[in-house]
Image (cartoon, rainbow, N blue to C red):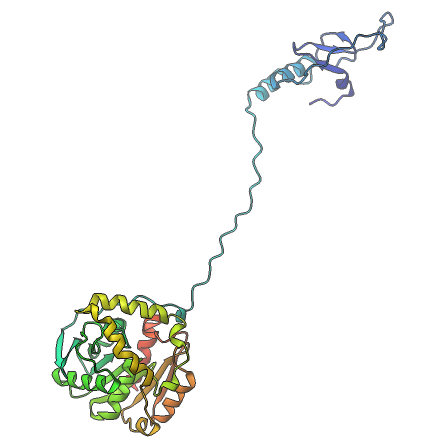
Length: 363
C-alpha cells in the first residue's frame, strides 16, 4: 500500500474511475499530483448540493483495480494478490498440558485378584473327623502344608504353591466348611481345625511337615505346634493373634477388609458343593472370632518347632505390639515384619512373601 499523502485526496467510485478534488481524471504511471489551474473555479462548498451518503465499501477486486489505476500496484502483483485466497487468522494454540496421572495406590490399599492353583499331582476330598476336606498336592521334596485364612479358600495360596513346589511337596486344604469343603458339622474352632490337619496328614501318610499359615490358618498352625509338636517341623505364622485382645477395634471394617469379605462370599458360591450353606459357615465362625484364640504365655512357650511370627507393616486387624509380644513369648521365634503390605501380603507382594518363607526354611 502506498503512503504518499496525496493518496488521501484520491478516492475510487464503484465504477473504478478516480477523482481528485472534485475533478475526474485518469492517472498515468507513477504518482501525479493534481493542481488547480488558474482558470479553474473552485466551487463554494456552501453552494454545493448535499450528496447523499452511500455505502462506499469496496470489494477486494475493486480496491486492487483502483491501486493499478493510480500506479501504486503493478498488474502482476495485483493478479497474484487477487488470486491468493484469503487466509483466515489461525487461533492461538493453547499449550497442551498432559493430564495429571494419579499416583498408583500403595500395595497395602489393594486386594489383587485371587490366583488359581496350578495343576495338582493329587487332589480330592478326604474323609476326616466326620467331615470332608478338600486337599491338593504339588511338587516333590520336604512336605509343606499351607493353611488359609477364615472364609477364604486354598486358591489364595496360588502364588506360594508355584514357588514352593519347585523344592517341596506342597499340600493345600480348604478348612472344614470353607471353599470346596462343605459345611457338614456345627463344630468350629482352632482346636478342631488343628485335629483336622493332623488327620489329613495321616490320610496322606505325611508324618510331619512345615506349616505355613495365614490369619486363621496361622492360629491353627500355632494350635497344632502346641498340641501336636511331633507333627510340625517348622512354623511360619503370618497375621496371627494369640488372644482376642490382639485385634484392632473395627479393623475388619478398614482398608480392603470389606472387599475381602465380599470376594470370599462370591468365591464360596462358585467353589462350594453347597453354596446355600454360606450363612451356616458365618454362624459357625462368629463365636470363634469373638472368643478365640486364648493362648497363654505358658502355652506359647511350649512351641518347640522353629517359628517365624510374621505380619504386614499395615495389617488392618492385628496390633503390632501384640505381634511382637508373640515373638517374645515363643522360645527362639523370629519376628518378620513385611514392609508395604497388609493382612493380604501373599497377594499384595507375593515375591516378598515367598522370599520371607524360603529364607526362614533355609535358616
